[in-house]
Image (cartoon, rainbow, N blue to C red):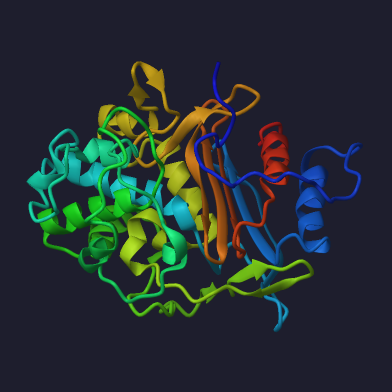
Length: 365
């Protein structure tokens, strides 16, 4: 039996719904009410949604506030959010690019590219890092909100001395440090900073704008005057407060990109259109679930890959970080891409978003 949507990412499920009665509504009206209720009942400060179907914009709208105090509304074309772990599909596209160019082998040892990383009991490969089967640990304590100006290379000091959790290839453990190591390997091989590699080899060639890396300083500043950075919040019992300061630069690949919802949707459309400039056979490895003992783990290489509770096949990712929550899904059979960004740390609204996504998938282009 297929596991339900989002099985392998923890703490992303909503357990209650506090919304108005939408039982008699359908289609766009129901979607609109469901999302507006999240604002009206103060579940979230702001949300941006962009949906493409059949290569056309089907639904795009901002809800709530990019800045509560100044009453600045969210705009799906110009409001820039932290996309958290939706960064992984962006980084995975960069990994696919460097593999396609022959500079990295997915099944080669990580030490081939980063020989100075401390040796562990077992060797592990780039593929195992990308699929979270290498045994690298996840955050401990306050590491989730780490606010230090680490470079990617410097940041391995946080976890490099720790033992692997299990023999690589025998289990699955989701974390962002896997992608810190992958981004380090890409830097070492290419001679470029990871963010520069993504810009030159992914974003520019694919015509993707408004996807940006976190700043090394920890204070994100947008150079494009047409864009506006949202404020980042955490939820209180009644209302919201500013999220804690965090520096996501070292983990750009795992959770440090910023973007508009429209930009993330366009990334998904590039995949649907098979315009990635990467061979389909290679790309399929990234968006197809890996297996352990011939059993699927519902995760590919930087992409979730599974079926939702209605049996619809998808690939994509959800993300939860300081001041940001995200959903990004590509449904190939329905030719639909869904991008939802929220400017709040883990607001526990996945149940409502699942309902919105289900309704979207029944809309006609």
